Image (cartoon, rainbow, N blue to C red; front, side):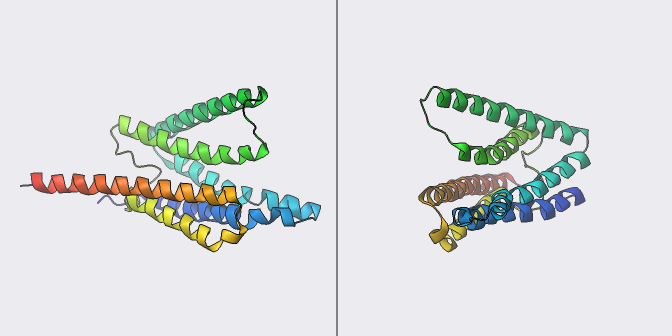
Length: 205
């Protein structure tokens, strides 16, 4: 197993706690916003999710800046793909909303950044494979991707369980769908991993 680079280890220490804080704020504290009536306190609570996002972006920038030229190129390709996809989706949604075909409110903007990150990760993985990599996104920390996805799915399921009373029907459904999708994705990757490992063991002399 390849030893993780210090750059990637630092990224892990910076990225995942910030992401965990973002998820916790969004689904534990942010739903309390309608109960707050003080103007400044409401503004502070509304903007609270931005704080962990800043640390996530900082971790991603430090990772990209610390890589070699090839890694920086892969990051750039992933960012270009993400910007193209998200901007195109925004344009489509804007035209449909302007034509009164669908109804969109301001809350849709909350999903822009998570969508950008997900598409960026997928684009970077694709670019990494094109340059002969293994598609590993962001870092190499020795934890297989199927375990990462299953752990995130478990985290979301725990949030649903502990914060059920504070979640709206929409938030509850969104979290359940996200948890189920991540769990299914993780199981698919796990099956592929064990199948590939089994084939390698059979072919080994």
